[in-house]
Length: 398
Image (tube, rainbow, N blue to C red):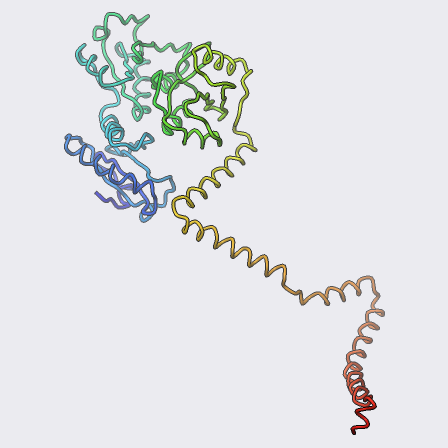
């Protein structure tokens, strides 16, 4: 459904998942068939979420990157989607956010069913308490990323032992971890860190989310690391502005954009542990960073990459986009350098007059007027002399 600008300013009574797009945006065109599949999937499954799209350039004065995906609930509450642009991920996001922020697990069967469906599961165990109020607030904030549940202690397996109630537990990687306010800090930060599995398929979206958390999940040698793998090296090459061979191991520090490369290929567990230890004790060389010089390099690298991509995809368009401005600038520079200055003589006269008194300036003006009057007369006399002085042969002919 195509929506108008009134959609943003009116209070809606339905749940809407909206794609704010721009007609000229290539990513928006790439998302269009996926967006149609999302609409069909949600409609066929009986979801209360309605799917629409809106030309943000025609109706909206807001500025954001395209495509911008927004799920608007009944009233004024809205969530923007930052995950992968795939049908399954978008549909799961819509169903998760459209439902309650905290879902109940009434039985062990329901708990086991949810454990099979989800890789990471947050569960509040206990009755009413200040911790439960914090948990509900965190769930409302972070439901865009993961599911939140509540259950009684009887619903959990017998192997799960809790130090005290109430408690917040996360189940992942075949085990579980309990939130400790004194060791883990705020509940929101803890949930934001623990919502990742121990080993991930990493892409640009996941790496962006890891950077937003300010830390990672797995603790080794008293330091936080997130392990994962990435298909291909295109994204990592653009990130480090270099070339990484495949396969390879690289450690990224998402807090300051530094990265570490092993001095030799990592082929054994001992070499991997040695590489990580070198990063921890500071002996491994750090590259990149977020300094001024590195930012300037990033700007130059991005500009070069953009130009190269344009020329690779459409050479003629690249020649037109970059050749025409360069030609115009070259012509302007040539015109400026070769232009004659009409004010040169005036500048010389002005320099001569500097330092003169009023009487000297009057005498100089008088001399110039006399020279202008005598000039035509001298030219006529010179012409007469030229006519009068003839060669002997010309006189003889006369």
